[in-house]
Length: 219
Image 1 (cartoon, rainbow, N blue to C red):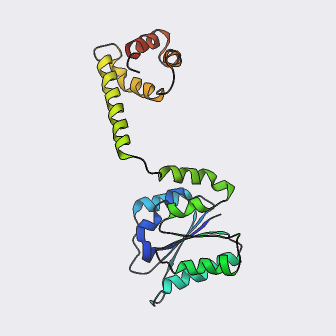
Image 2: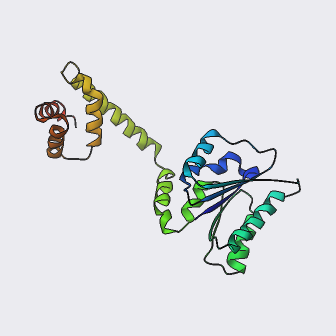
Image 3: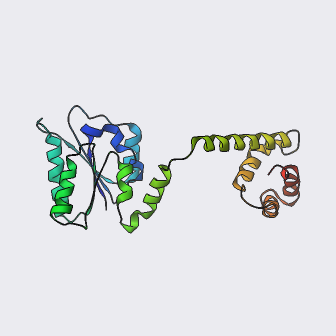
């Protein structure tokens, strides 16, 4: 189980980016004050959908770094209870001292104490085997790609759709254009022999053969 503590006064809604990756066995604790009590609807939906245990801890008395001290105390309690995967969502570098205390001073190499600016950045560092699929999904979502290459790909796909639409226009299959484009897009990397067979399987022997013959020189 992962426990995520959010210094909401510090990171606000930005810190909740990645809330969609929370799971039922996770715990999410938001630390805030009276001036920071608003949360976006999409984050509410993500928290509710996850089924995670949720707590909102409000500051009782305003003092310098009071919420930080709340979170410091919570981290100590969590570790005492046996929690080993704790994410501290804050831009405040002061929390690194808490991490240093447990990991470097106390020698708790079993602990995964992670400080990050948002949930999505912290979760991939947790090593529980049950978190594998989540780590893969987060890394995939946040992998950077070349914008020019993506634009070229989109242009090629649009050209492909236009070619198929043009080829089917005026034929008995014109009304099935969207369905046929979806079918062909899903078969992007198969050979012609497989495409021919799958076309007949999806549209029937006669229609599948005719559709294949109409588009085979495009795909």
